[in-house]
Image (cartoon, rainbow, N blue to C red):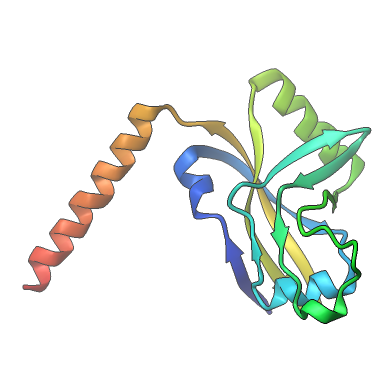
Length: 148
C-alpha cells in the first residue's frame, strides 16, 4: 500500500520533469517516524551526485518528538539515496551532458519503507512559469463560471 505523505509542488512549477524514478532514503529511526507523520519539507531540496553516491540536500526533517532526538541532530543533514550503481551513473551522465537537475518530487511510505520519487528536470524560464500561472488562473475562472 502506497501512501503519499509529502509533495514538492514547486518542483513541477520550477522544472519541466523529463524522467522520474523511485529511490530509498538512508534515515535514522526517528527520522522515518517523522517522515511518516509528514513532519518534513522538501521544497528547497535537490539531489547531487558525489563519489558515486546520490545525496539529498536541504530536506528539512523536523523531529517527531523534540525530547527523543540527540542534542546534535541536524534537520538539514545530507541523506544518502539508495539507488543502484547503474542508475546513479545514468543520472550523472544525463545531468552532465544535458544540463539537468535532480529534484525530489514526493516522499511517501511504501509498507514499512520510506521512499522518495526524484525527477530529472530542466529549469523553466520565467515566460514558461507565467504561461503556467495564466493557464491555472483561466481554468480556475472557468470552473467558477460553470458552477454558478
